[in-house]
Image (tube, rainbow, N blue to C red; front, side, top):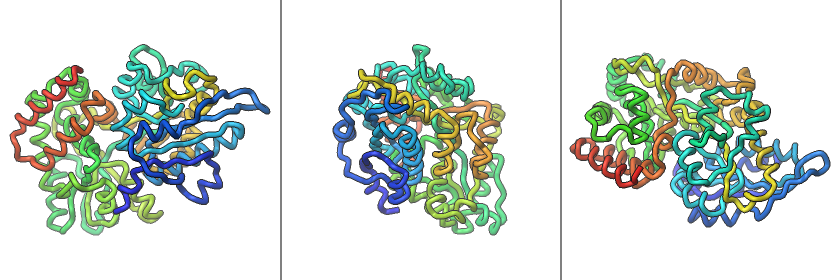
Amino acid sequence: MDDQDKRAGLLSGGQVTRREVLKKGLIGAAGLTVLPAVMSACSSSSATPSAGSGGLSGKLTVGSNLSDAIPKTALAGAIATFSALNPNVKVTVNTVDHTTFQNQISNYLGATPEDVITWFSGYRMRAFVDQGFFTPIDDVWAGPTGALYTAGFKTACTGNDGKMYMIPWDTYAWTVYYVPSLWQSKGYTVPTTLADFKTLAAKMQTDSLVPIGLGDKDGWPAMGHFDIINLRENGYQFHVDLMGGKQKWTDPKVVDVFTVWKGLLPYYQSGAAGRLWQDAAAGLIAKTTGMMLQPQVVETATAAGAAALADLDFFPWPNHGTQWDAEAALDAPIDGWMLTAKSPNASADQAAAKALLAFFGKGSTQMLYAEGDPEGICPANDADTSLYTPLQKKQLQVIGAAKKITQFMDRDTNPGFSGPQGMQGFLLDFLSNPDQDLNALMTKIQKFWDSLGS
């Protein structure tokens, strides 16, 4: 996986066709230096969809952070189908690696973004809506699309002003992945308590395995570890209140989370701060690592071939023996599509963009993506779940059993707080030096939150 940094660039193609998808597998690559400038330059200048021979016409740009090979190719297939249904609409997809897209999103949205972009539900969606970066799509939800979603999905896509802003596209659970054939050969069983989890991890070490894989070079994977430990130790409400600034990072409950985490770090893969998550996942598939809390492991298994994907399973993070275990809470982020307010086409006829959003909102479209990216499941209730892989069917069960769902730290809190200067950096600091004064670290985190004026 030593080419991962090379793949962290702008992948930009012209009109996507199914033939190109089959021939190339990916959209053609070009280098990326600064997201707002490069992506703005790639946007089309004016789109005025009009009635053609029974359909729409015009130009439509799509901005995506689905940069890893499998989800990027799966999205290209869905776009190709839309293009086949609307041959007079030229769709241009501009893809930027996940981390760069996320870290530069504020400047990008304030400049000249694409017409439709992928983004996250939760706090981060609402924060950008409040800044006027997105256009309401209540009319899309008022059509057949609205009937395809539960109240929970609708709430996740609603802004603070009560208007609709997002079409759900994909959801997935943060759970612990493992390779069953390895576990069977070693006689391991799935742990249900934290004590059993630590006992298993210790046994893996004696078997010359890395017990818990982690690659946090991009800054965000460790957030999932904090989230689940906080949910088990302190419960859903404390967690979301902490993310929203209603609870303090200096609260002893937060120190307890890091203390519990510190007790697990002897079983973690060393050097996580300098490792890409893809490299950590490769160790799991190669059977040198025993467990890994990260859903993107499925991408690595899929790329390794059908046998590797078939030899993959997961379990929810174990109980901690607290009152909050019954919540069975977990991170199950919702990815979706939104209509930007400052694209070059924002004031033009938005028929093509809204048609694409409605198309993305259908279960049949989401299945085009889910079939190519078995990491996630479809939010729309008309998706044909009989087409799901065993892993996807199990995700449905796990998410359905969760009484509380969170969106993931960088989606549930202030965007400035979760970035490289904020929690990404603080968590990397903790992983690199877990023996530091945790109270002092919490004070630094709280001061940083306060400095944002949230």
